[in-house]
Image 1 (cartoon, helix red, strand yellow):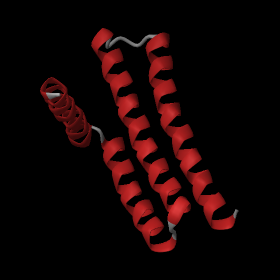
Image 2: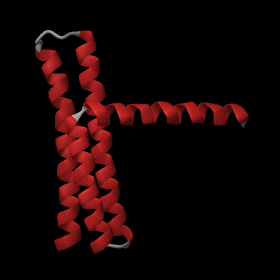
Image 3: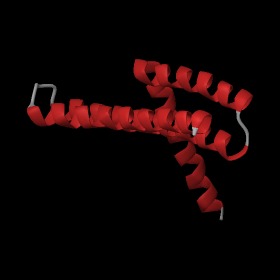
Length: 115
């Protein structure tokens, strides 16, 4: 049990380092955090139960997608800084994942409010 807790401690520390690094270095991540604070605040004010949970979870998923996009961009930049069609495709796919997740969050809001 002690070994499990030790590993959990370090995994938590490393994860929060990733969040901190994204906050400091990624404008898009900060923008999504602020958008989520507004969305979450509205959800807390207007919604309850399952609808509230859905909106909050969708916001968290947008942040997760943005973190994955950041990881893709950093990895591609580590491999090559040259313009290459495959590097562009990888970065564009990561960005598209964020966009699709954000659209899903928007759809959730529309369904909850008008559904």
